[in-house]
Length: 378
Image 1: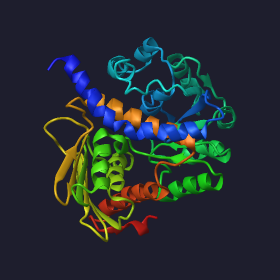
Image 2 (image 1 turned 180 degrees about the vertical axis):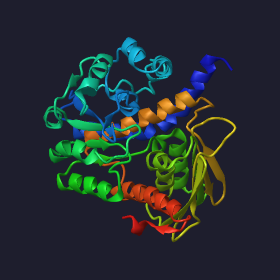
Image 3 (image 1 turned 60 degrees about the vertical axis):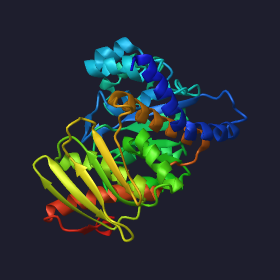
């Protein structure tokens, strides 16, 4: 198969995947009919890792860049690692890989904030037209929506970072781990509700092309109900790593099965952990962190429907980079639709359930894999 044939197959494959977005665009245009040419100003905030800045935060440099019309590729190559620079060139900003949606015509990043102002200039160079915000309050006054990115932090600073924007009712993406604890997560969600601010928090795994296919199969009922899922993420387990990256398999399970989990038991050894999440009305879900596979795919999910097993990874046609581009794009597109419609795409109950699963599992490991009820950490 030559490259032109592969591109054509991708167009056919992704045409169906983008339908949900296309369907919501019509609603969004009706919502903004009085301002058809409005360009939404996005304020990007970079969280810290226990007080230390994330100068090259992938969730602001890679994920949020879909919301800006142009980049300085030379600056990207200069400030990010060579692999990331090449990825921007070959996939993320490749005009052949736009999914017929990019660049978004109605979005631009106008302000960027980091508590450590000294790390801001490279971002402004990489994304032309973006200004440094001297304070969170200044940012909130100058934008229409907020994107809080956190690549490897623990979420304990998230409330303080998003509160000024939420107080103004701004649509906000608050990265995972959303609040650093179940109580912290609930605090952010309650504050958002109080100020009528649409809020989204999500793992990238929720937006994989395979996840979209699995949800369509679930909702159509063609294979019967879901009985069981195995959600695995590669990489090496550690207690801190679980709090940050254990979010991914937990998000996968909750997206597929809903927020009705009761308890978690987790066992960890060396660089691998395995958790069983129990439900009152179905077989448990399995969560793996550090699950070895012969081919690197970062994650792999098996969905056991009553009639058939469906498995997927982020890759599209065996191409992980392309599939990763797609899931990042879809998360940004989902945020965009929330900004335009002010309709939250993810129920708060699911956001809380993910956080509770992660912390119940961490407690279980410390207590010889005891089955820990989510209520114990909520």
